[in-house]
Image (cartoon, rainbow, N blue to C red; front, side):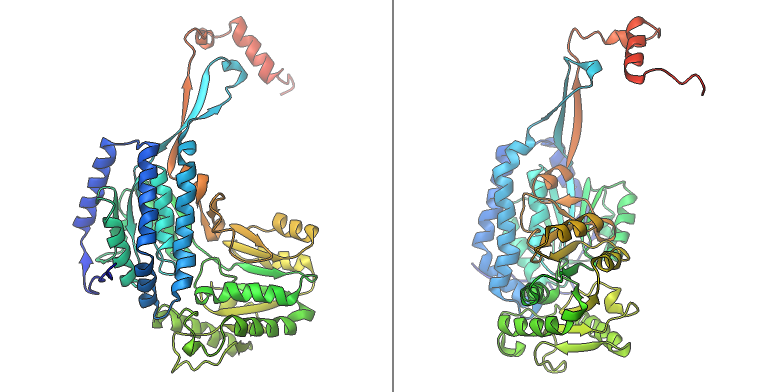
Length: 486
């Protein structure tokens, strides 16, 4: 398999070109508005086959874009995750497509009521840079399972991945089926301004608000996956070393550049020192030696994002925080291969406690009571994920019932995301809508209610003139008697 060549940094795609492809997809959809289960499964199987064929090309492309990203990590997270999602859709799409029988009201017994799932049309997908393959193919798989045409907008800062993915998809799809935009747009809003039938965006809450405002001009429904500050709560009775190892893995994977990465840890006050030491030990165990020589550890995507993370740390230090690096790090020499940094003595006015970190920085906050933990979480915007480390059922239930988050993993991090029989999405500031599995199919389909009147059903009994015996009986039966005192 030959290596894909990225587009030139100066290459831009015109709005005329984007609009032409959009119109071609709309026309193609109008001619074939309901692909069969067989057609959808064939397309999904083709994607799955291409992932296998292009796995080395895609992994190498992501490595080039990040500066250093383990091929194994890319294959496990971006490619295996996409394959698992495709497998699930291939197995279930025929069942998902079947009309759902519903029960009529008692008044309409003997008639037929059902919900049919109809493809929406042309779906737009806006992809972030942190998992450029999984977060492109996941929504694409959901959209195709639902019978749609798809336009995918890739991030400009992953040109090698964009070129590889574009080549992979153009092998199996025509432009009026799936179209991938890997080049820079003259005006970024040109894509979101298109009158899509649905738009999926993954990124920051700030940009999500802009996307939603632009989509509103066309009344385009949106699915927003926005991230946020996902807490990891360590129970007083849970083994500190085990919690530290799993949180460290979550925070160090992809250098913490994950929307569901543990953003900060809440730890019993008396265990703070032990927890920090356990994080350092876990990091040393996972990434042996210097980060300078470790090819299992991912770099920060570019200098701009590195500068942002360093500014967060500098702000914390200036306000009294203590920062401990988990490995030797010379910012001038090592630059973007930045190891995990643990931050203690955190205060509310620090930027690391206000902004999503999206990097290898772990604030650790102490607590005394479970209610204090719940109040701390609820005082902030609702996160995309929450991690509860506890073997106590009552503790887990209290946290699940009294806090809001997009999803939860108990006694580990992130694994709820890659189980594709369950929905994935945010709540409040961390997003809206879901995809993955049947919920993704439903999200990208129109659930059309269909009522069929039985030929001999006496519907005329509900017509004017009003006041006949059947009408009076129905009103009395379902409404009861009015209150004469009102």
